[in-house]
Amino acid sequence: MSFEYKYLVFKPAKIDTNYQDILWKAEVNAPSNYKSIYLILIQDNISHNNRRTLKSWIDFLKENEFKYDIKFSGEYIKNYSILDSENTIDFSLFACDIKASNHFVEINSQYILPILYILDLKKGGIIFPNSLSNRIKHAKNIINNNDDEYIKDKKSYLNIFSQIEKLVQICQNYECDIHYEIIERKIV
Image 1 (cartoon, rainbow, N blue to C red):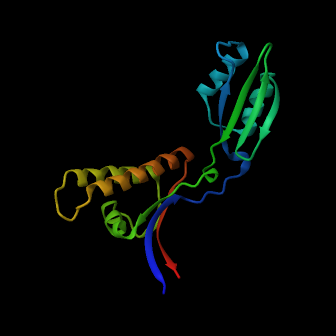
Image 2: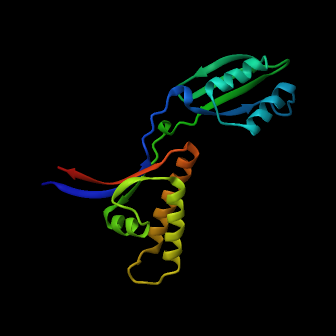
Image 3: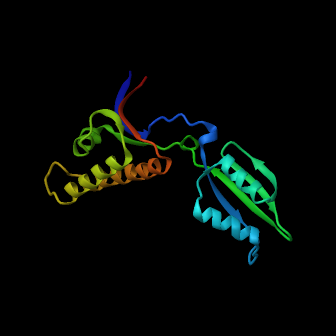
């Protein structure tokens, strides 16, 4: 006996990122109540532009003549100790790569056609995150201002839109489009 079901999936469109092009976010930790020129310089640079390539961050450390040691170097995390006159400043870099996490929204079969209809989407394709966000805002207005019987489960639709909006935000941060399609699975 086999069982088939369909679901609609929204996920980041596949992007082939060159490792050198991945942007990294920095975080700095210093002992409490500790102030130094190094610390202020790092904090100012982080607040000014906290998304740079790894090479750009390393160049920043070298150009400002920081003395640093690498504590940990993983694929998506790098930790450094910056040696200051009296203390050590922890400097961490985190990859802003969409492939570092699994981001997707799955919608079960009973909501597929109504969601596609109200968002005015085809059965599959790629969409710009801002465009999808605008369609979701429009769909929420329709649902919230409509008492028709065909929209029986407003809470579920609004919850689905909320999940998709989170994905939209992630895709905007990573500057990638959103891929959506109906997938059929067979369980044997």
